[in-house]
Length: 634
Image 1 (tube, rainbow, N blue to C red):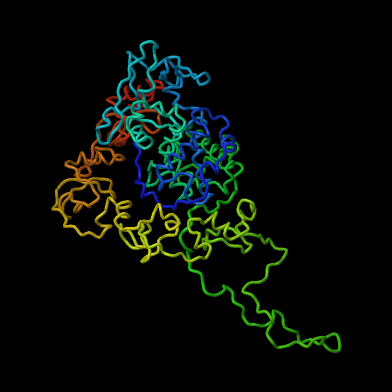
Image 2 (cartoon, rainbow, N blue to C red):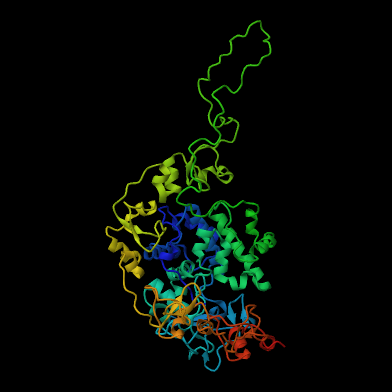
């Protein structure tokens, strides 16, 4: 499907941290341990280059640089676990069925598209090409989308057979899966091209660059990880805000793996888990992330630890450690007195009334209070498990403590967690709120900052002498703080500039045109509430469209026929064309009702005139007669 992306501002759920992250945490030695079979273009240097390029271009949406150091390790492990699986352990630069059998002629890569039944997995050769009649229909081409349409896509269509090499077609004209997360479809290539190179032409002209250029092979996967939105979250969000590996799997291939739709995909999920556990162990994380957001993932892991995901055995029974980003303050305000105050200033033991065994007591008991009042808690027994050093307290106060009682997983790994001074601990674990951790009162800078944390309601810039800015902004003034309200509003709220500046404008009269309703993912009319199909007067930040069709074209994640019908209060009807069933074993019709209807097709699903064409072009590895028969319900 076409990637649905969040704006850079909307993904700022966590502060930018100043810890090392990226390739400082993932050394080349660790990378080689995780991926011993990695081959070009999946090199360690290429990976580091792609990370640096992305973070330089996206200072407010950084990969492997946000959250705590442990969260960064978790994200690296989750990313590599998924990409190892998607790329055949970093050996498959190109999708095997489309270009596993390839040759290079005059510097040009030629592909021999193949059905699964005709592909030799050992030699990576194809006995019978899918190229027929001198041309090949790219199954990843939506020819209705071009660079000038909205939504857009790289121009594509039937690909001519190479004149000198029967059965082969140019790789540079096909939009099959490439790179560490196998970027596919012409409408995704144009988005990745714009994101990584600033030009649609780069990958539209030569999509095979993602298979040959180290930085692009990794960069396309990083773009997907940081930009592809499902259920309102990216894979990056799933790790840092939900501490969820299951959420990343659902984002990447949830339709087939959450839950696993057939026997093949059950094994696929097991292999994915094995890769993740391998990466988690090598990155020395404190626990595995949650598997809950991918239905059935925990069940498969329970059954595969003795087989296909044996690397996960090391994590059985390990209690998850806190991985969510720390909040800006304690959940409950600290009290002003000790939890257990002493009951009275008297000695713990008083003299007994029994007669002494000697004629007179050596010292007569006094009635005075003890020299030193009792403390609010007993002195620790020297034989207890007192742990020396400072540790991060993420669960209560969000500061560093040295009370000798860290969580067990920290106490059991003191080298990894404990530090000798408060400053070292605060710098490592709470660099984004260093002053608060150190007990230092911050001084306002006399500058403006974006109101992302909604200290005051509204899309506005606040003056830090009126409302103190979050400390992570004050520690990075070049990134977040502005000397004037105008420059702050221009930088962070250009889409709602008048509101940010407090400029009151007279609303324009209703245009009766259409705009996108972000809540319903449908289109509504720019007219007063209560009117037919009205959504109220259009907000300043919204774009108006002359027709409902043009408006629905912007809602790329909803089938256009569904959006157009429901936006007008109608019941959507299917096209009666055919698309692939989720089980990947047959095709079904785009309609509502009994079989062969399979429900309304999603926007990303390619439609075909009949079941025969659908099976031939998209399920070529199946027995074609059986596929057509199953599709028609026979």
